Image (cartoon, rainbow, N blue to C red):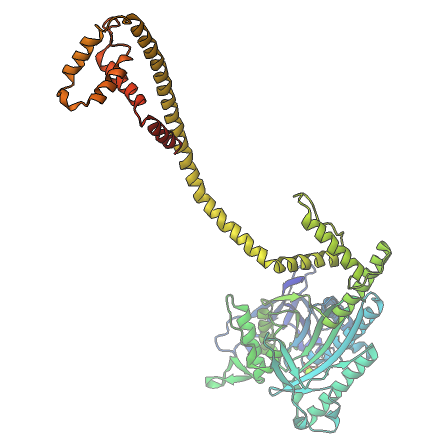
Amino acid sequence: AAMVKETIRVYARVKPLGRRQQAGIYSVDDDEKSLSSLEIIMPRDLADGFVNNKRESYKFKFQKIFDQEAKQDVVFDNIAKPVAECVLAGYNGTIFAYGQTGSGKTFTITGGAERYSDRGIIPRTLSYIFDQLQKDGSKVYTTHVSYLEIYNECGYDLLDPRHEASRLEDLPKVTIMEDPDQNIHLKNLSLQQATNEEEALNLLFLGDTNRMIAETPMNQASSRSHCIFTIHISSKEPGSATIRRSKLHLVDLAGSERVAKTGVGGHLLTEAKYINLSLHYLEQVIIALAEKNRSHIPYRNSMMTSVLRDSLGGNCMTTMIATLSIDRRNIDESISTCRFAQRVALIKNEAVLNEEIDPTLMIVKLKKEIQELKDELVLVTGKQRTSELSQEELLQLDELIEAFLEDNDPDSTLDVGADMRKIKYCFIRLKQLMNDSKISGEKLLLQHNSEEKDTNKEVGKEELKKLKELLKQRDNEINILVNMLKIEKKRAQEALFQLNSVSAGSTALEQPLWVNLEESQSPASSFSLKEAKDFRSSVHRLPCLSSQTGGKTSLGCQEAFEVFKQDHADSITIEDNKELLKQR
Ligand code: ADP
Ligand code: MG
């Protein structure tokens, strides 16, 4: 929300007393551009009456000073009109008059009864506000007024119709209620609706009459009571749920005069006590607000400061009028009024635009919007849209979902158009299908587990591959050996063939070989005859036995052993076993 941060504006108004009485006591330096200054000059004879008072003149700065001849309309235009404008825009506003009794507070705030032109700020503001409201047709305005009098820390409703019949003490007291958000609510203070200027003025008149009734038996009670006339405005644009609420307090404070203390020797002391205790608390609040980094502001000490809490350092545009009756007798009171004004001028307020949303209005607004959108949809689609999908549409969707689920194409999409109801239905349906296939979900889980086994397999596969390679290598080696063996066998057969053909007629060569073998294989008795014969027959085939070939004996032995193995009875079994082993 928009926020306006500004200090409290402080004005001064000097009451007409006749030039002669005030001659030479004060002077006004009215600067159109910047602040105006008021100088109060202490007459020599009076200055002697003050203890420790060496000064002869005092200067005070004000936003503007309205001297004796300033008329009510000028005061209104300068002081009240800008505040009224802010209130109409939705900000809170306060104008309060502060000064000693008889200085012109009531005259300034309410006005004089003798002449129409003496109307004060309240009637002029009401007139201005209702004028503006009538001119502004863009918003719907509601105005109420309340009129509160605070006397002796008790609040009274000046608009209570029982005022005329009852005594002040018998009326229900206005009390302060604080909600959890620390907002102030006033119990027993009536808010009277005023639809036009006349109604509002009648209420003001009623309140002022009640104020006078209360005054008479109490003797000058009015000087000790505070009166707060409040205009409550709420506004909203037609069709909008946002409401702006603002208040304008127009405050006529109790007389600020103090009981002057008489010092030693009958001298007057500048330090004096307020007659009215709540004004003392008001000053405390103002001193606290003017201090930097002061976190606690004692608003709660009095009813008046509680009611005006927002106006003092809070959410409000606040203006003060210091009313002065500057004659010889009132110099000290005038100075203290001006001093108070200087402190008030230091207070910074933060006026916030008071906007809130009315929930019932919001519902009405939203319902209207929904109907408008539905109508628009009908217009665009040509179909009446209900909140439910038809049975036919649901069936169609089911088919689409089924087709979508069965489509193996990973790029396939489920297109149901831009109808949110259909999209929602599809999601619900898919969720149902998901839940229904819990068993298949478990299957999925199983599959997941077997995948874990696969990783084990993966490790096995790797090992298997290695073993297979090793086996292949061995196979190759064996093949090479077998081939070598075959070649050698062939050669041996050829050699034997040659040998046989050479020694066809003679065994002479055979004999010494035999003998040689006989010698090397000792003891000869260990050979059975059959074995010996077998050995002989196999030796026959040996190719390199011939000294002619010059064969190496060791190789020859190995080869002979191979031949022996092949001719052995178990040769086939061994070969089979070997084959088996290879396979493994
Ligand atoms: P207060 O409310 O501060 O006690 P009042 O407003 O009652 O003082 O003023 C005291 C008297 O002086 C009243 O009769 C009032 O009409 C008169 N008075 C005050 N201010 C002016 C003014 N600016 N012009 C003419 N008369 C005034
Ligand atoms: Mg008065």
